[in-house]
Amino acid sequence: MLPAGWWPVVGSGLGLLLGSFIALVTARWPQGEAITGRSRCDVCRATLRPLDLVPVLSFLASRGRCRRCGAGIAPRHLVIELAAAAIGALLLWRHPSPEGLLVAIAGWWLLTLLILDVEHQWLPDLLTLSFIPFALLLPGPPVGERLLAALLGFGVLWSLRLAYRAARGRDGMGGGDPKLMAGLGALLGLIPLPFLLTGASALGLMLALVDRARGRSITATTRLPLGALLAGMALILLALGPDWIDRLRR
Image 1 (tube, rainbow, N blue to C red):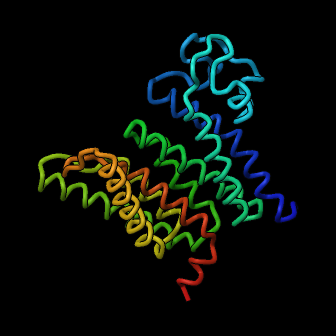
Image 2: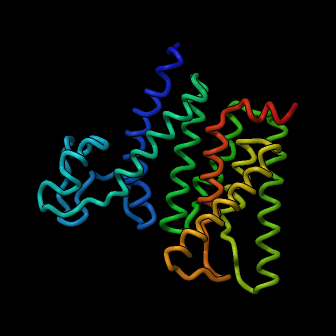
């Protein structure tokens, strides 16, 4: 058993490695490209060497440019690697145990969904539906409660989706959002659901205000990435650790 202080180190190291993979998957998968091929420069298509693939350090050493053609490397790779490292370190600091590794995997899973929704407005069934049984394996409230939370979370968002379509004649929510909500119910249980929805709504309002301050037009048809907001709020709740749910139960 590792000392508690070492778990965040393990989490950050694994996060850097998985962050590089997440950056690749979220860039290639939505384009229909294979995710198992060798990494390459997006401009000159040259295959990258192992020294070019060291998370964060390779980007800094090359000053964010391809060593062959000098083209700039998208900073998203660096940002995703650092985000995954931060998620791993934080979650394993809050959950310093082998079971905490499962919580960290859930965090990286949610990061992947967040990126796909922000960049491509896509929450693939392969990730949202498989997240439900995985979430039930994690430590947390009783499984029966979490199954009920999954059904309730899905039902609430699916009902809102149908109601919006009936009132406006168009979809106001993607089909992946209720499925993700079901997974988050299975992960967190019943009590956190109101905090999850309220927090995601608050994050969405903040995002809209920031966009408006930047001069972007915000209308009734402006799309906000609800799945990404839910995933982001779920990461915040996971980072708070298990104690806060226990306090709410008392």
